[in-house]
Image (cartoon, rainbow, N blue to C red; front, side, top):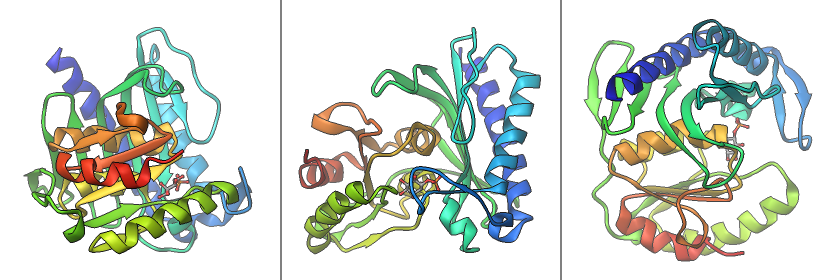
Length: 271
Ligand code: IPD
């Protein structure tokens, strides 16, 4: 029901803000705790602390829900809701004290580990350095709420021409993936106003929702990078497309007003 979705959204908002306030207290994330898929893919001590905070709160408040987080084992559940957590999206920015990172908290139905088999029903992305909270639940519209208490309804840019579009993207951590992403960006760059690689997919999606970017694409996202921002984007009137015109997936995510998604997808949707 709408009331149940609003309850999930309220919890997502509270959790994202609480974790965001924790991480912003610590410059440079207290250093690197470990490297993951490659030397470029780092996890900071604060990624781990932020995720532990989120997991502890969820275990207390929603013990029947499942959890899928970036740092740590999945927790099974019985309620049909899975919380998909990114404790710091933009970890490399965070490590360098570049203030473009966020905490992303999403409540999903279906199986977030199977492409195309899940949907976000409520979510929040909190950008602590700017004091901006992006949030939505299914059917609610998307909103930006500032720490000062201002609330704004979000809608994607009205731009219709790719040649006038500011397009966000991102890169994975593996060298072979980056080689392919470099080829794709070389095709896109001559055809757009400019490219931004700001370093947090969750913020990129929310910024498309707010019209701060006209469109965004990336291949190889993880569910936790995508889950909350995808709902904010679609609730702001944006379209999301995956590979081969399917619903957005982690393998390829193209986001923006429908007209721009239609123009961008053929450039970036290559095997
Ligand atoms: C990364 C960021 C980045 C995107 C990468 C993600 P992380 O997430 O969202 O912008 O390009 O694909 O892995 O590692 O900072 O949580």
